Length: 392
Image (cartoon, rainbow, N blue to C red):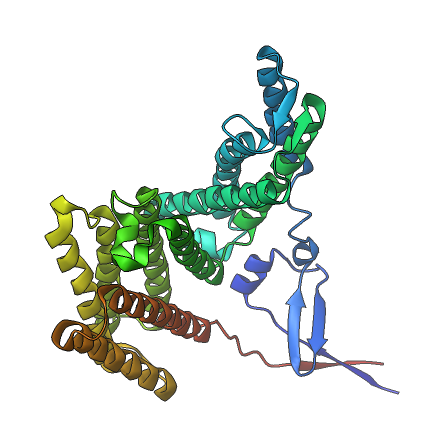
């Protein structure tokens, strides 16, 4: 009986990317009608590439320094939260060391080309990504220990127990940050952007609830009268840098799929201008000395979005009808809200700003998702012919 095997020729550039050569064994993973080619390198999981000592040794050093600090102070009972406490130590040392480890592994992934996303990021975008992760990590740790202090109100531990707790928290933070550096992708960056904006705004609202910020306006959250208004402004500024990074990466990738497209260049410029305007809102808060300038910058944000919505049909390739109608709906609501606020006087300033913020934020998220799908359409597809080989 004659047995027929089929041979598949793999292009050289694909073999180089898979790190295989002639004679190496590869695996074909078949699922339904899809086939995935895997090399031995792809079998090495993400978790196996993270060296154990990378996240344990820094945590051990931080916990030793923590113990020595309180030994010098001759303090054996340490609070869970407070000015000098377990929480304060983990927030500061965890943010610093975690950000440093993220930076090291992100740069290493770019140089070794183990991460397709990081190798396509320009060096000029690194500060924005690193700063964004540092802010997110710091805010997350602050929120975590605030929650713990609410659950375990007044909790305190002896120095040895506190040192062990610091070590455990530091290990978790370091591991998560290294894992984030390995698994960085455009979708992860979009999620980070979403978490940064939503988290920063919600925390600012909660911090100023007692001051009844809604009786003033949305911009009150970033003023001198607000509680820790600098956090709200920093959120906007860092988010702007992150949006510039996203736009830069997305359009560099899009130009590989749609080369020499002047329409994409215009769309890129408008989105970059939008990001700069968002950062300017945080840079010039609605204090007395910047009141007029802040209002002009915030108003310009709405006009940029409306201009994008109107021009999107001609600027964006393969625009879906669903997203086009959603965009028109957002534009109509923004214009109607402006009319009800500025002309009729029906909407309050706070209501108008919240409506505008939510609509703009959601629409930008949807647009970034559409752009990411356009990049995915450009995934390289190689057509090869299966050749029959007969074995007696």
